[in-house]
Length: 596
Image 1 (cartoon, rainbow, N blue to C red):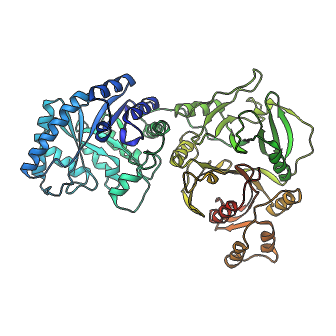
Image 2 (image 1 turned 180 degrees about the vertical axis):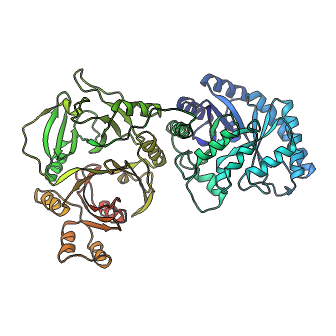
Image 3 (image 1 turned 120 degrees about the vertical axis):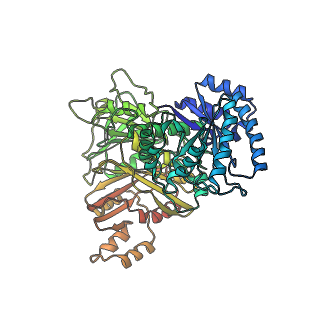
């Protein structure tokens, strides 16, 4: 289907918004009146710019407080409308959005509203314009879509129809099934927005917290199915008011927006995309560093052995069990320290995973490689992390390990087995985008987000994972846009005995994150432990959690650059991440400086 986005959904000048929408693949735009009024371009120049970009102007909006008002007020409204219709003719827009009135003089009189909308539609028809009447969820007398439709039906004019807005419908808890009773040709426009489920004033909810489809809690797929069943053939258009989106860069936001509509079309059967290829494990993590010494010391203390080196690049492979860490000291290494730059995802069909990613607008990354190197497809996640789709030592597919030549090495330790999970802190304005990306592109369902107390604000986290937990990624956003310390990343490694692993790490010269004594004192009040057990946890800085399904024990290394490791022991069927211990960890890390 045709797709569109309201200019109010993006940041920047009108020309920046139009360019971002076109580059992201949208077919059209809704031009918000404030964007036009603030633009130095004339309506004719805006029309030409849209044509050059391949964009249609699908809607001009909004016109407010038109109907059910006293006669003298309505006469003023008609004069205002005539000016707007003339402007729209210059602009090349043929549909205008009229919101249900919130005017203090508006009367609770459907017959009056219908008669005045009929007169407005007559005037609009003279200019070749259609009027799409929308029920605002906070409208003074008309606040539901079915009420708005009854007024449109009573007005009975061919240039008057209704606009359906998913937020106004679903935020009020209206049943969208009734949409199927509206003739499709009278649904002039469909506006879509998701939103987190919140208990707050609906106007404030609407103006600040809307998000793109798939990022909130509304059943947009169900609503779109009802609209399609009614016979609607117009565009799917996004109208999203969001404080973060209106401050973020327009280009990436527009791409995220279009991806959300592709996902929605797939969910409703309106588009066919390559099938999701869910990763089955973490093949490797790649650390990029300007100085390999601190990283090597940390990995060595953890029990990893340097087992191989890339045949054409300054990249070493460190291995322990099924956990593999690449250490890259190439020219791309950042000067601000070690960082987690790439993740290799074990994929049953790497080529299919890449096709899925490309279809969902994930940026495919160019890769410098020698002719003999294994061809690996990689895309960029919203935070810039490179994601490789690969196979490890599987005879039916090329293995990425074929690019590495073995090195003489001592046998790795056996305390750590594999990657338990990865924690990636997102740029403050890309948290929702990251959750949608990992769900749609990688096929990893997102779980409920949690807020964690940080010494300087709230740290928000939302995990995504495959069904068996072999791939777990915790997506987080720090408490403040300027808080660089919140951009730390970490790799959690699983063990059958966290106490033994922690002791071995410390005996090898590793430094564990110190945990305040107050934390372990509180544990004694909350749980019962065997004799000496709590003292061991106190000595090693091990944190503890227990739920109905199992027990979670974990501890942390000190940070190198932006990266630290977590040692994790899961007993029973514990599926969480020790979220209630996170405030203690965050506070302890704020008190320590990275070591390299």
